[in-house]
Image 1 (tube, rainbow, N blue to C red):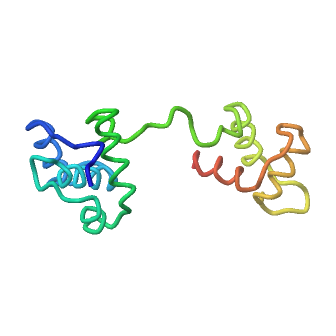
Image 2 (cartoon, rainbow, N blue to C red):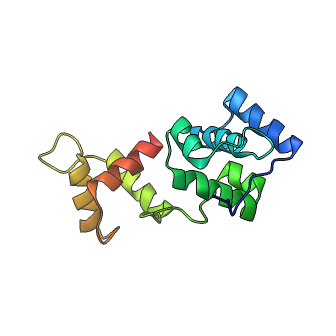
Length: 147
């Protein structure tokens, strides 16, 4: 079957990919992308998508998309991967609100309690109208960042 997107690596690109694979530079995904590109190179081994997918434990569609990204977006974008433009989920607490959570946690617990619990902190934050609603898990992750 004729490929629509053909990977043709320059000597410099090939050396860069070999270096990434040899030294395991970067994330596992980056190393795998480098391996796939090296095997898909027409001037190199020129493996089929099926053989590449089998060798590296991924789907053939993954290999096809990597070829396409290489041709359409370029070498660096393909190797490094797409960077998120914004975080997956927006921050739930502002800096001021985080400071209030920490201050509340460092203060004395309510009467009848020996220590603050995450659920107790979450209820108190809503009660004091610092936030309209909050999960105890958000309180945990906020406190974990600062400790």
